[in-house]
Length: 271
Image 1: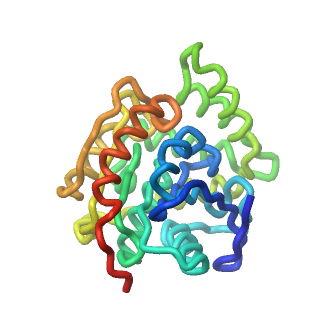
Image 2: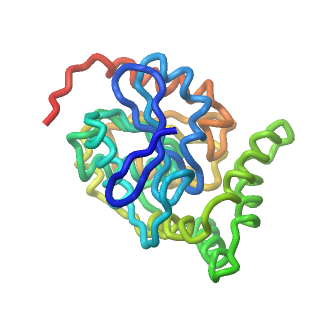
């Protein structure tokens, strides 16, 4: 494990492989470990940099509020401190929103985006997404709040099948270990993210991956993202729920490599 100080917090990050840098951003309540099935394949071609966002994993969990701009500033600070960039940026769910914000705020640091099961903010919200966000925020109120019930619910949503029992157990343990206040601040950052038409300013290559069975970020949100990023490639992952990188890793890895390898040797001017 490695840590680095940026923006008055210490962030945990890892390095794997060699080649052009590939920043890997996890989803809400997760951490860098969620990319374990990607590192062997992607690390053969790229210098993979999975990290724990503030409030997550082994990174610091400062008092809130948090914002998408803050998450993105942490990532740009890490790249600046390590003197790395521009980088390819891979993000799942919350990580995909951070990646979008980074590309808007610091386009000079982003070579491409791979966005897995994410959205351009929740607005206007569907009834199911609004109900889920409200339920989670209510469950985490007060000094006695803990993550156990939320962890069980999320694990059941992500990995409902019997042959996914190992992933289910891992998810319960990982999610239950979250600091409830940091999780709440991160969830609120998601509810306040709404880049809208500003996304049309993103000109780097973009790949959107969409699990067909995902109920956490329904397909309607991914279609909105597709319309706001008309230059993006759009690939569906069959029989996959929200954590496509874990439930369909081989398919996801191949889709990412099909997209990134043609970009690998393109010349980039660092400004």
